[in-house]
Image 1 (tube, helix red, strand yellow):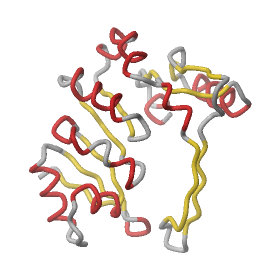
Image 2 (cartoon, rainbow, N blue to C red):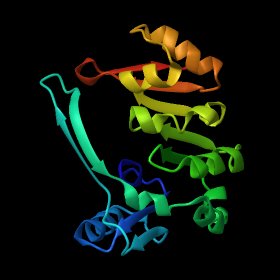
Image 3 (cartoon, one colour):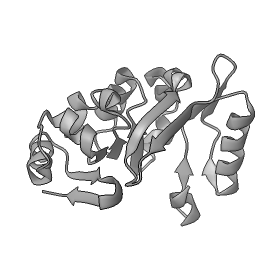
Length: 184
């Protein structure tokens, strides 16, 4: 949304249910100029939802989600629209995608800037085999520890591990403490 608001051409590939939340997402995206014709509408699933409870410092205490709809965004669907994706200068993906879909993006679009968001400690592991293909990685502190296997608060050490494994730029969100960034 923010990219579209500053005039960047944006195209959304996603899946939403044939429900009020899906209608709202598409309508609001279109209102700010995001191309939505590649958003799949499904009657098999509800639009994905996420709810988290934060503590006083802004750190997540607990979260629940239903992301089943995104399973329908497959490598085959993306392959059907490779002409659109190939024309992109940046691809932004998150680890809600299946491992197979992430693999497709990482392998097929090596000459594109790939930005990835880990979204959770368990889903972050889907990104691990493709770190060398990720130009920019966004994780929180817990996801960074989990993905790297480094049980430490030393963010320089953790960032070095990611750089050694191919990630050019890493952003680690720190709740109320802001964001740690490293480009090596």
